[in-house]
Length: 425
Image 1 (cartoon, rainbow, N blue to C red):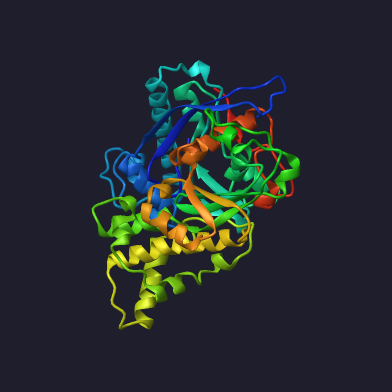
Image 2: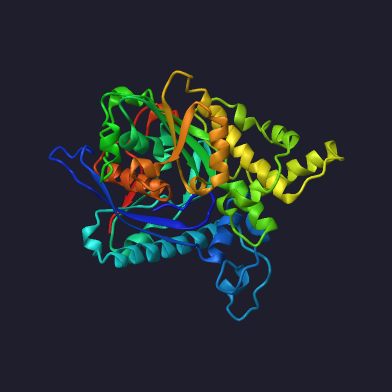
């Protein structure tokens, strides 16, 4: 299960990993079923508020939500005073668990699979604070509720074990990318365009399957070759759907820019783009990761205010801002990708995440990556919508099998560790 930084909903997948006698990941993975559901509006509103420091101060609680007056005395009228972030965190964690349980049960009902047939649920939870420089990352979910409502053991809290050994706790999907998508004869780069964009660079290796094997049905899950781990690179490159969706929702009646049509109707504001690219995150060396703490609507509005002060005579529309934000994602990601390729090498870039459906963004990426072929993971046998959900099914399986799930060269950890905590049904 996965709900990403963009908070556009919860995706769930049912996967089958066939074990051999040694319990490795060398046998095929089959994607059996998928299901997606939008967040309840109030839960999404509270989650977004929790993603910002003191953001809950803008919330007006109802009688069944965190409110000191009505909780202590039911006969008193509710006030507009919200309780602390901890109270809202507890409320949202419970509600998230209940919602996730509904999603799981609907997925199983869809394909008539009994809960007893499922070994475990990998539930990432919702990141509400990611502070790798402070050594912590907080994913909100009550796994106890999911285990109780579904009757299935739940693996959650994937990031903090990596951080306990010096890692960033992110990104975690490169290990999964390496296991499924490496090719023997060419470098492959996976670009995930979720709320935040991140890349995985997979060097060519003869130890992994041929293209025909990878593209065949079902997708193959390959054992992690210890000699290759140090060659795999992965890190966040900057914002993606997070800013695109926020700006779209603020200025249109839509939650996202379908196909990038609105952005394509505008013009890139080059001086503004250059200003946005001065954010210190872009200049940092990897390992690195980021989130809503660094890139959010308030940051964008502050940048626009600064731009207006220094470029008073520049005229632009809201569509121009959307075009500029789309270009920001394309430029920041492609700049990093270009550092790993040369003109003589055959390199394919495979895009996954919601951004893979943004045709305009895909075209801008191709324009900035002239020596690469830019495609989606559909050509690798896995729809881009479900890659991250499958990744956390795979990570949960690694945990249950007692296998490491992080790549130290990617996260900066000092060793590989088994990730996550298990709440047994």
